[in-house]
Length: 116
Image 1 (cartoon, rainbow, N blue to C red):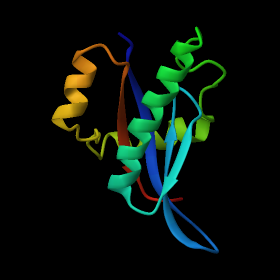
Image 2 (image 1 turned 135 degrees about the horizontal axis):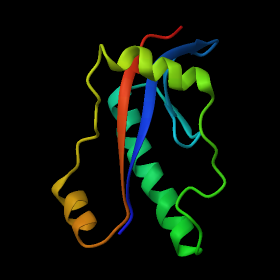
Image 3 (image 1 turned 90 degrees about the vertical axis):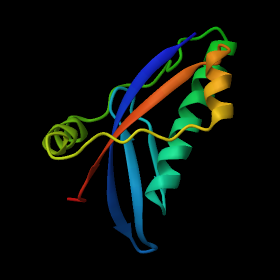
Image 4 (image 1 turned 120 degrees about the vertical axis):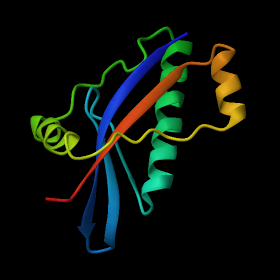
């Protein structure tokens, strides 16, 4: 079974459509956006697992083709890590049982930061 922890920094951003939340993964430059931070965290975890399952089903490495995030996101993560506790998505009993039975497991650990 694949088990990997992905670190991400979450911050608020704004454009002409209004404010939104951004999750930037560090080990692999994967980005997700959403209006609600809790929903964003949940959807990020699900999306990462789908990526892993798909790539494994095609005989590829779980995150084939993804490079690490830009250095500025690593620095932002390190800056706020000392002040914040990592957030991990809550898992339902069904999700935990599915993982126990061998489904790939990706555990995002997120740090929330203020937008710069």
